[in-house]
Image (cartoon, rainbow, N blue to C red; front, top):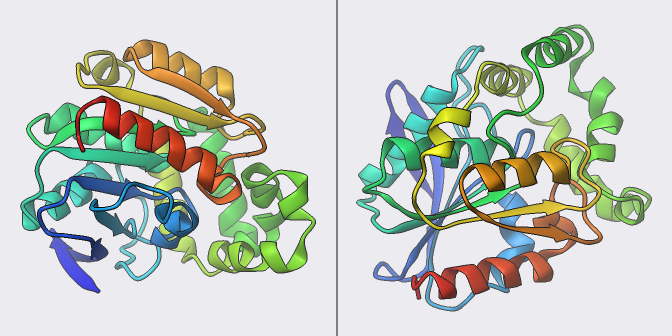
Length: 262
């Protein structure tokens, strides 16, 4: 377990695999922590150096007061990469994590070799919609909104399996409200269309076929924006790495191999 400073806050980081392995850095979605990737990791190629971290306001990372900005979230990922002296990173970002990846690739092309954008877009929703969500969260908390969020995360088979759903509900509901709201504000005010359109590195875009948070049409639009390969993952909602870990890992593994990273 590592703790790495980014400005005045500390971030929880996991660094697994050989120190000289090809670096794959993962950034999690809103309301999850670094454990969201665990089911998928065993299906990736051996010998990778796997970097995972909890966004500010999530998991074991510090939770400063909201609001947060996308620039701050990008700076957090940048601080981790610089502290660990990471190079030639394949950055895999899920939802808001994909926005962080886009921002980091634009800011620090010296760090990022390739990019996997999963269930994300250059712009997610509208400021008005996110601000409405923030207001509802301030009034009712995450527990009151948990069912709606979980409906977006997963298809019916997982949602209807109480024992399978329980850890994900717990992860969501135990996320600090201030951290969740802070990241909602960052998404509300972020439009990466211009910078993402200028990316020149290899990019793969993935999306669950039933994702209603970032629907396939929105992810495909961002894929076209940056010349990315695009794949829809059947049998998954907003978190394909959870519902379809084998399929998701296979697509990422093929991408990593094809762009010459292993």
